[in-house]
Image (tube, rainbow, N blue to C red):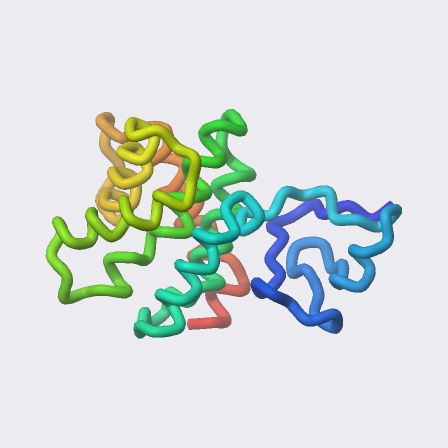
Length: 171
């Protein structure tokens, strides 16, 4: 059976003739039980959140950070997190990590408010939401001993996405 062994990145809402960039399985093939992609896709964690972030990307210019980059960062976060729980938090942070670039004229306070608004689409407790928001707001900064494990995962996932062939070609 075919298994997804890499970063699995269908364009969200892929057509049947597109393939998973990580495992080269088409959505048509994924319909067959014996060829189902075994990798958890980041966008499946919180579909309403993913749709809201996609809308943000469609309505705002983000330069070299398209929606697919956010998906890739989220997927890498799931892969590299030391525990599944941390992976979920870091994956959501990955989906949201372009928010400041999508709204460059917004103040930090308004960006933070927008992040918390998006996080209503999750089942996270306030402390977990705060970890995600801090990670998003600090992901562009240099590494610090003060970084949470969620921030570390997000920073590392963003770096991996930035050097991936897809991201290099997209730029």
